[in-house]
Length: 149
Image: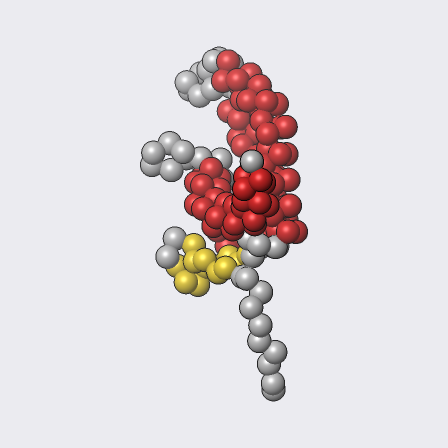
């Protein structure tokens, strides 16, 4: 079979050096950039609500007879809700199944060994790839503007 080969700008990255687990995206694709920035804006708009709910859960300090917080089921429910939301957003941005490839059954609200959220680590790891390409794109326009001054 013949194949039509052309550059689509696709970047393929392995997850934690496991070449059987990869994600791919084109940071130059306007549709991809739009979905990525929509996630950031959506997160910013929901951040206050999430923090308020987390504070309310943290303020409940009652323990049961075994010394376990009585609101522990509510805490787990909240983290599962956030996990589902963020994994859904990742699948929306990068394609169905991406969150499973990246995280498996790990809740993205879990912390790494330094106490950072796994979802935050994921975004921080991606940002250089996305920002570099978007900056090049925007730079074409800002460069022209700066030369005029």
